[in-house]
Amino acid sequence: MPEILLVEDDQSIAKNLTLLLRSESFNITPAVTQAEALALLDEMHFDLALVDISLPDGNGFALCTAVKEGQGIPVIFLTAADDELSVVTGLNLGAADYVIKPFRPRELIARIRAALRKTGQASAVFEAGAVSVDTTRSLVTKHGYEVCLSALEYRLLLVFVNNPNRIIQRDRLMDELWYAAGEFVNDNTLTVYIKRLREKIEDDPQNPQIILTVRGMGYRLGGQRVPQQGA
Image 1 (cartoon, rainbow, N blue to C red):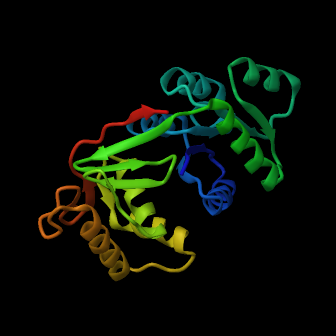
Image 2 (image 1 turned 30 degrees about the vertical axis):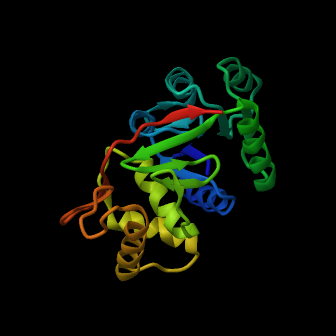
């Protein structure tokens, strides 16, 4: 699943966009400010960034430059600024596209997919212990053998491999499962999914080395996580 950074300070727009993009099998990480977006870019790998121009602590033009220099991924401006100067500035900075608000949802999805195709991006493979996750092919292997995960188990695993240096709180994980399942997920349900995931990817589920419990806080990824680029 492609990882998209959404930088939007309008909470209503951000919420609706997140629901739309997740329904189209994109993983979305939202940010409200330029500073928050820059911090996320240091911690995670993304395949594309959707960026508003007007941000509380800066502007999307500066962020676009940082994204292009840091990760070299496509940037699509999503903004109400429709004057010619803003459009030309955004495209001259190397943006893949410039979408004016209000936008048509299907058109935005098409533009995102087109930008991702143009990158010709190689598959991203993340490794944690003996487990490898190829996000382009949605393929999970353990000691070289394919592991069959349900859609919810796979989404849960993606949260961990895309946040290797962070403790993931249980509330965040429940939100991710809720979005994927389309129904309420409670604390007990999360515990069940963590148990099922460990049974499939851990060598010893009773002594996990990949999905580690941080008592009183949540979970974190154990083992090495090495992003690789392959054809």
